[in-house]
Structure formats: structure tokens, C-alpha cells
Length: 266
Image 1: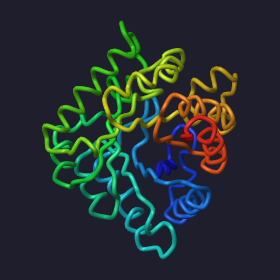
Image 2: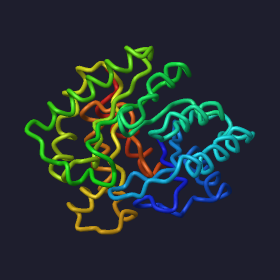
Image 3: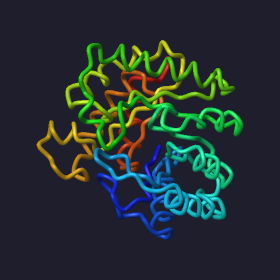
Image 4: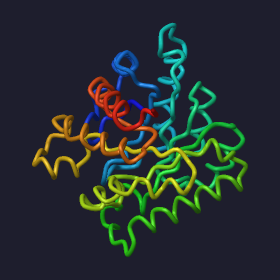
């Protein structure tokens, strides 16, 4: 899953792709480099990010999705996920041509999200978080990290099914970097297999995140490519199904080799 942040303030690429032309070019590069899904978001979810209005989020992402779908190249056909916590944006995004809803709140922030996704009949990614991006890094005190994340995701999966979303259309994400310390992020990566009990595909997003910078003493997110690669390999070994990344070209090679070693069935 290639990340396309159509924002001025995302943590590692904010402002780089906030025109339709630059965003389309980046989408094409990611597709050519091997991306299977393009994840488009208009609201930064970095720690401390300022929440934008509904109108601004719609104005950022809906024209871009429509523009992608009008192209005659890979942009016109590649699966698109709309990264949003608002049901109105999810609905408009799917109607504009997106295929998947990616909700970092686990469909908690907007009580209409689950019923909206159910009515649209599309897959939903449910992520674990505590609080909101503005305060989540103050909420990292867990008694049982993996158990609490598992319970949250289990409850959200049950709620999604109860709302009419088919179980086979639910993807889970333990939320690395969201209300987690660096050591907690590492523990999640070590224990990904424990989430297989939920019987959902597992998405892992480690790309360029601060725990990698902490290990490498690297403050520049764009210089965390190979640290990201190591984390991606670890996720593959531990049975992650989808990797959400910025550096698609590099991670494509990394994942192909890791898959060949660890995931190819004899």
C-alpha cells in the first residue's frame, strides 16, 4: 500500500504532493514501482496534528480521486483506499471511485462510519488508537499492551459485523505509532502473530516512523528508508498481509525477497 498524503503537514512528506499534478505523478511512480493499493488521505494524523474541517478534507481528496479515476493509465484502475475518520468523506470517496475505507480510529470517531461502510459494501480497515492524534502520545500507559489492542480490535470487528459489514471485508491494524512508545511499537512487531486470532488480514504501517528514527538516531523521516525496510521484513516474517509504505520502489524489492524466503509455500 503506497501512501499518498494530500496534505501540507504530514510528518515526513507534508506539502510534497499537495497539488493534483504532483500527487498524480507520485501515484504513477508508486504504481510503476509495484504498489498494489494507493492510500489517499487529506487529514494529517501525525502526533499533534491539527484537525481540519470536513469541507477542507473533502476539497483535498475527492477531486484527486476523481482525477485519478479519469486517467487512462494505472491510476484509473489501481485500488484506492480513502484514509479518513469521517463517514461523509468515506462515502464521497467511494462514490468518486475509491474502493476501501481506511479508518485510523477503528470507526470510533464517527458513529455513522460502520453503517456507512456497510451500505457501501466496501472493505474497511480498522486501526487501534487511543485518544486523538492531538493527545494520543500522552495515552501510552498499558497494563497489557497486546491484550488491550487485541480486545479493542476484537470489539470493533464485532461492531462492524453487527452493522452489516461482511467479515471477509474487514482488515485490522494494530496502530504502530498511534498512542504507542518506541518500545511498545517493537513489541507489536514481535507479536503480530497474536492478532491472527481475529481471522482478519493484518495491515502494518511502520514507514519512516519515529521509533525507527529513535533506534537510528535519525531525526529526518526521509532518511529512515532502510530502517523501514528492516521493520517491514520483520512484519512479513511475523505474518503481516499488507504493508503501508512511502518508499514503494525500495520496499517492493525488500518484500519480494522476504516473501520468497519466508512466505513461499513449498
